[in-house]
Image 1 (cartoon, rainbow, N blue to C red):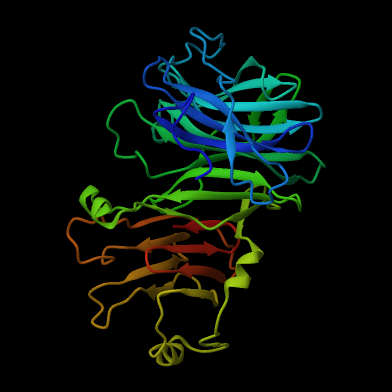
Image 2: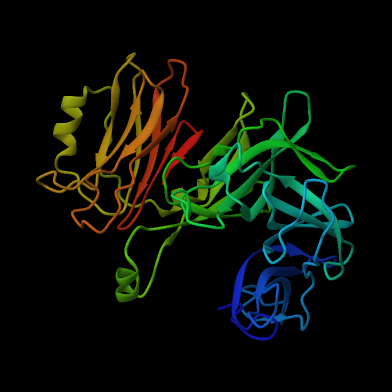
Length: 391
């Protein structure tokens, strides 16, 4: 455990991000939870006890929070919600560090508040970095959690583009809660300290109903990497009995596609986890392929599958299938409706588990569908043509 409840965060060390200080040493930013105060959420900063330890096992929190939300923060968009202030994401540009913190604007929508610093410890409020519209797009919530802002490449005009991710939070009950992550592709206006999206409508990042809690970084190769909290749908009692809840998703590399959309691929390093190759089928009919697949079993599999486009058909692959087919998960592509989806209606025989079937648009313009599927004992991640994913 790198950081545990203590000091400035007695009631929880909640989500945040990492950065490097002016000496190139690591710094951890986190949401300091202290229920004796209001707001009970502040930005804390921790530094390694020993920067020469390659594992950086021990960390020390600064004795004071580095960012505390002040009441009545100025914002052209409206009244900033006081007390909704969490999940700092920090990056450096030149000699300035920037911090966005998840919040919301009363009766307007979720927002990310921007701060600037020259030393990582003294932060100046700038204003809302980007604000949503909960009336036009109610699924994006009243407050934004876990804002993530990452460069994804330059467009045809040589302009640097960024992806901005958010996890919606709702003031009251919503059927959309803890299911989705939304994103925008756009530009960073450094003069006015604003994110300018290329498209007004938010785009769903993952077409499943489990990918939440995005966390991101730029690695030493300059790749923008995103990973997730994958929410399971077991009951609280099942969580308690098992002693654990939820999963971490695979690390994903982000890119800018030629059409201006966000590209997503599991990182290449995952190939190092490969074991025995169980089967290799090429230029086969589905019936012949199924005969060869009949003997293939495994609960830790990587599958790459390409199916020839055949106009107006629906096809895919069934995984986690029991011998009598009473349980199975069907990943599919429907050419006629251009839908990439999962039929999870038979994913469990347990009546208490919600069956999370879902789908989203994938326009391939006659290209073959190329699925890259990672399957293990509790989770399935499927990636289609480097563009869309389903967890």
